[in-house]
Each structure stands twice: as structure tokens, then as C-alpha cells.
Image 1: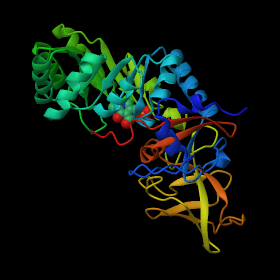
Image 2 (image 1 turned 180 degrees about the horizontal axis):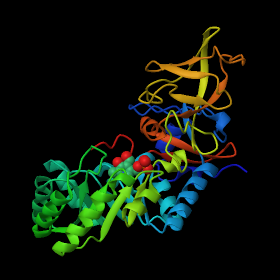
Image 3 (image 1 turned 120 degrees about the horizontal axis):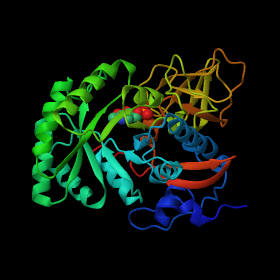
Image 4 (image 1 turned 135 degrees about the vertical axis):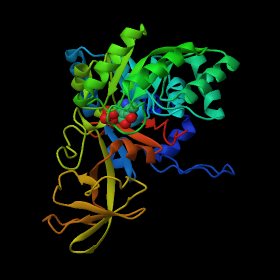
Length: 389
Ligand SMILES: Cc1ncc(COP(=O)(O)O)c(C=O)c1O
């Protein structure tokens, strides 16, 4: 049955949707009438490159991670930086997640606007006047928690809230080996927590780390011991990372944050031990072969601006053609080494490509197509795309 427009339309203006889906060519800013270019109902109707999400796999990943956390008896806070789409966050919450985590304030704003009403953690030092004003605004609309690793960051937040009203929950970030942000010792965590507890408008709640690793247990044990001795309650002890849920539990966390699982499955993809797998990976980039210049080289219609080039090669996997390797990327061309393939690729042929880093790839796209068995069920704007502030 043809998909109803209202179902496809979720969360977008009608004009945006038409543009995104390619149903009409974008009208010029001068207001020229749009041109009808045909209905889009199936994956085969999409112009390329187009990012699709397989709903059966997405739903399975969401269900399986929640079941895993239920078995481990650890609440799940889903990190939405992987998908940046409120509709997917709401699916995760409906499945049983007890909160969301946003890496940037802009993502949190998008989630609140998209109807997310759960607890929101921003595990990021919020620095600078504009951001502090936005945080104060968000604190009036949602139950916000932030993580800090210095007195100066905590002070900035406290001062802004004294001026603007509202309050915020605060976690101290521990660097337990991730070597990114975070205080460097349990003693430093205690001293910072004591200062935060005295700052107006800040509600000290606990500690967090990323990623959760078993090696962090002594750091956590010592932190919990010091806080207990000082009479400072640790309501929240938060760990994170897809595949690290059991480690979170074992090192003493009472909540775990996972994000990548939604697209990758319960184990993080990496280039050596867990390569992109069509069964667990929910996204595909639908691509077209635009050139076959030599016997060993095929060019597809997207490169760095469609995917991203960070991980080791191959940068993505072509479904059904594991021996064809996407080993090079110009800005708008994907270079496929087909020397090991017996398949004769043809200009115009369409390929389904699994990006190596799906969470970064989605940030390159205005919308994604939610697909079940080849039929498009919804077009989701990537509402948090580009929200890096
Ligand atoms: C602070 C924090 N928590 C949780 C996560 C989720 O990790 P993953 O994507 O491996 O699930 C990340 C990912 O970068 C993170 O930075």
C-alpha cells in the first residue's frame, strides 16, 4: 500500500520534505514554482547518494541493547550523537532507556524541540557566554545534567544560573584512562565535587567517565571510598560506550551511556576485529556507479562529502561485493578498487554501501529515509546535523 504523506512527513515542513525527498526540484529563492519529478515510494526511486536506515535492523539493535542492559540490571542512557534524530531517540526511550545524552547543547535543543522529555545529560564542559545563556534557557525546559572537570567551568554555569534563574544537576568527569577530559585522580574529583556542592544553583549528583574499562575499577573504588568518607552522596555513577555496558556495571556504575549500537549493533565497529556487517548495521548509502575508467577502478557518486574518510581503509563496505574495496575518496568521488572482483560493474548500477563510521556519515546529510523491506516508511530530517555548538 502506498505510504501516506502524513506518515512520511513527520516533523518537517511540507516544502522541506518535498525538497528533501526530491519530489519537487527546490524552488528558487525568488519563489519559482517547483517541478514535479515523480513519486518516491521505494529505495529504487531515490536519487543518489541517499542515506537509508533499515527499520528492522534499527529496531532490533534498540531492542537488543535494552534487553542487554536489563539483564545487566543497569539503566541505559542513550547517546544521541550517533543519529541526531529525535524520532530515533523517542524509539529508544519507548524501549526503556531512562535518559538521553547529547554531546553538544545544540543537540539537546533539537531533542527538546523534537519532543524528548527525559533526563538529558550533556557530558561536555560548557564554556563561553553564548553557551551559558543557552544552557540556562534549556534548564527551564528540561531536566538537564552537565559534566564538568574544572572549577572554572562550574563557576561559569553557577553564575549564569544565578543571573537567569533555574538550576542544573552536575557530574564531575573522571579521566579513568580515556585521556580526553576529566579530573586526573579520585582526590581531585572529591575536591571539585566539594566546591560544586557549595556553588549556588548547582546540584552535585555524582561522577561520570568515558569509556568504561575494567582497568578503571581501582579509580572508581577509591573515588567511591573518598566520597563516602567525606559524606558526599554519589547518586549517579555513569559509564559509557557501546560494548562496555557490562564493564560499566562491573566497575560500579549505576547508569551506562551507549550510542553507536543503534546503527552498528551491540559491538563497536572497528576495522580489524568487527567490520561493518549487513546483519547488524542499520544504515546504507545508496550510490550509483558513474564511471568505469579502467578494468580495476570503478567510481561511485560520492566521496568525502557523502561519507567521511577518517577510519582506516576501506572506508566503507559494498553490500554483496566484499572483494570490491572503497580505498580512495575525492571530495565527491568514491574510488573503488575492483581488481579482486569478478563482477562487471556498469555505469548506472546502484550499490548499497555500509559506511564505516555511520555516526559521522549521518552528519553529512539533511535527511535519511527510514525503510522497511525496500519501502520508504518515513523521511527523517537529521535535526541535529551540524549542531556542533
Ligand atoms: C561521553 C560519552 N559517553 C558515551 C558515548 C557513547 O559511546 P558509543 O558511541 O561507543 O556507544 C560517547 C561516545 O563518544 C561519549 O563521548
